[in-house]
Amino acid sequence: MKRFGVSVLMVALAVSAGVARALPPGSAAPDFKGVDSNGVTHSLSEYRGKLVVLEWANKGCPYEQKHYNSGNMESLQKQWTAKGVVWLSILSSAPGEQGYVTPAAENEYLKTMNASPTAALLDPKGTIGHLYDARTTPHMFVIDPAGKIVYQGALDDKPTPDPASLKTADNYLNDALNAVLAGKPVAVAVTKPYGCAVKYAN
Image (tube, rainbow, N blue to C red):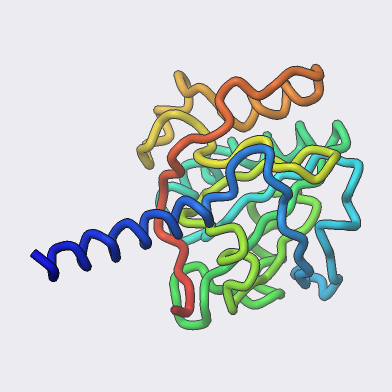
């Protein structure tokens, strides 16, 4: 019985820790610094006053490919950056893991895909990824001008790598950004992210 009690306590602590790291809506978005594929350093704090999208990326992931090969992610990037939204793609794959890229390789990929994030931050040590508890590629976060997280989770409601699903998908990211720009609360502020697990070093 004593051993069972200890096990239950350990599970409870683990669950509690997981919830604590989940960065619920309304919480302050942790500040970070990251170097992009052009060697430029970006910090979240420098974008205070603007809407910011964080997108965890891995070009080798079939779920990510659904959005990029169809042009969906690129279209979203163009649509929202044209409205003044800062879009940061973050690559937290460790060296030797799927999705790890050099700066030159990432720039070539962005050019080939006609992608246009504000910047692609290379995070091979997983520092930013762990800070946000990013779990999948893609995993999306929306940060409002006050620096608060207002959405985190999946890009849409179709957890499949099939691009045909985009035709009937409810795009949670669009919903969140439109709500903030309209001065309204985000109706669905948390969803379960889907995709490939982020390939952290440990």
